[in-house]
Length: 315
Image 1 (cartoon, one colour):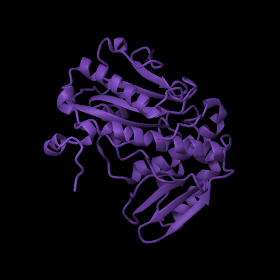
Image 2 (tube, helix red, strand yellow):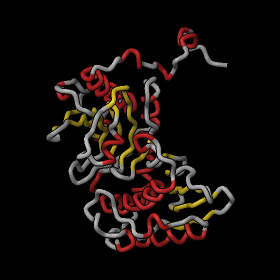
Image 3 (cartoon, rainbow, N blue to C red):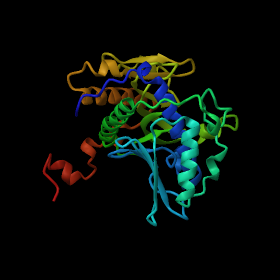
Image 4 (tube, one colour):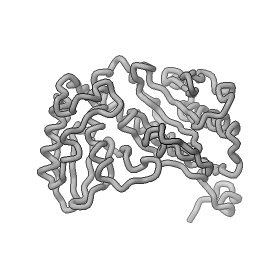
């Protein structure tokens, strides 16, 4: 794996805040137009060879929305052959919103789910995207580095997911929290009462250990890999983590964090990240009583005949 690039939070904060809102606009359309999946798996974006995508959604027409971070364009394509796009350069959030509504309309896609949309869980949640001229920074180099980072982390998470034979989420990029993540599940149902919000009740309806990478925010202004367990078992912060990683006390819970700056010092970055994920998983899952050996899946293989061959190629 190529070395992960540097992307200090402060160096692209304004661009990140603008891009985050771009993604939320498109994400809210995906939420409205995609078939619902357990744990909201229908909602996030997925990494492509040029950027990120919603994947196909809708019905009349079926369409997909792609961010192309090589050409720096937003593309709407339908399965009946229509294709509309616009440049991401120089747009405020309001300008992006207007251009997106326009290309959706030209492609025959109903834009009504996002016309009055507002940010989700951001400081300006009370302001319509259509009225946001404040966020208007788009640094092409920073965005390209963001996408390259997503691409590298995506592959590491895919490899880590292959080690677990139980229920596992896709590797996906959340437009809510602007992170890329994957989650492992046990079979244990978690009861939430009506005081919990609907997002939380669906996301955490089973025991989970989750893993990912985020680009930093005001509460933790540095890019970092992370892991957490929910519900959190007692004494999780006593579980050993690799050098450079630590448990952060978040009041009611703890978060295992491995800053990108520490990862970049490792001679084998991918191996260091996988070791961090493995340590956090084994710590949380062991305390939660998971059968770790039953779920183990060395090299992504569950075929005992192939596994016994110890490396013989298929086919």
